[in-house]
Length: 291
Image 1 (cartoon, helix red, strand yellow):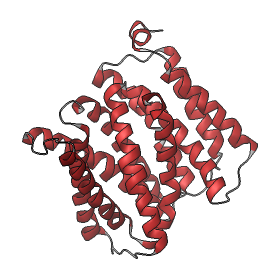
Image 2 (tube, rainbow, N blue to C red):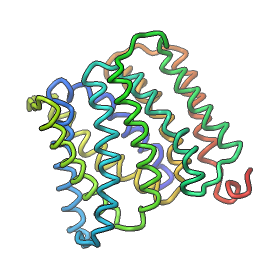
Image 3 (cartoon, rainbow, N blue to C red):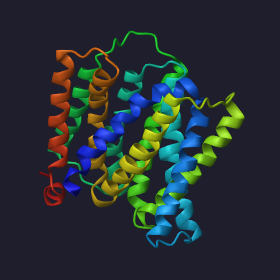
C-alpha cells in the first residue's frame, strides 16, 4: 500500500488546484483557508483521541509543529490562494511553485546533509523541463507584480517547510502534529483575513463541495501522505514529486473543466515523469556513494 502513496499523493494534491477556482468565487482567500483548517484541526484532534494519541506534548514540540503549519498551510497556501484570487494565472502560479524541488534539493545539502547525485540532478532538471513544456506560457506576458511576489513567497515557504518538517518529523505522532499544524494555520489566516482583506464566505453548493474535497481529500489525505513521505524518505526525493503536480493538474482541468490540452502537454508530462522516476528510484546506499 505504501508504494502507491506517491501516486495517490500526486492525484489528490493536483486536484486541489482545480478546486481553488470555485472556492475563490465564493470566499476571500484567507477567510476560506481559515474555515478549511479550523475543521481540519478538529478532525485530526478527534482522530488522535480516537487512536489514543496524547494531544498534550512538550511546548517546544508543539511550537515546532505550529511553525510547520504556518509555513505549509499559512504562507504557502496563503500565497497560492491570494495570487489566484487576484487573477494571477493558475498555470504560472503552479510553475513557480514547481521550482520547489530544485530549491529544496539545493538547500537539503547544507541543512540536512543530504547528498544529491548527478543522476538526481538530471532527474530534477528533466522534471522542471517537462513542467515548462506542459505550461508553455508566453514569457513576455504581463504578469501582476503582487501575484508574482505572492507565488515566490509561497515557493520559499514550501521549500523551507519541507526541510523543517524533515528535521522535526520524529517529535510528535503524525495525527497530533497535523492537528497543531492546522490549528496554527487557521489562527494565522484569521489574523490575515481581519487585517488585510474584506473577508467573506458565501456558502453556496459549489463552495461547500469544493471545500469538502479540499478538507477531506487534500488536507486529511494528501497532506498526511506528504508528512509520511517526508518522514520516511529524503527531502529531495519527496520534493521531486511536485514536478508532476502541474502536468497532472493540467490534465485534470482538461477532464473536469474542458480546458484545451495539446501534444506538447503529453510530451511534457512524459518528460516530467521520467525525471521524477530517476530521482525517486535511487536508493539510500547509492545516494550516499554518489551514484
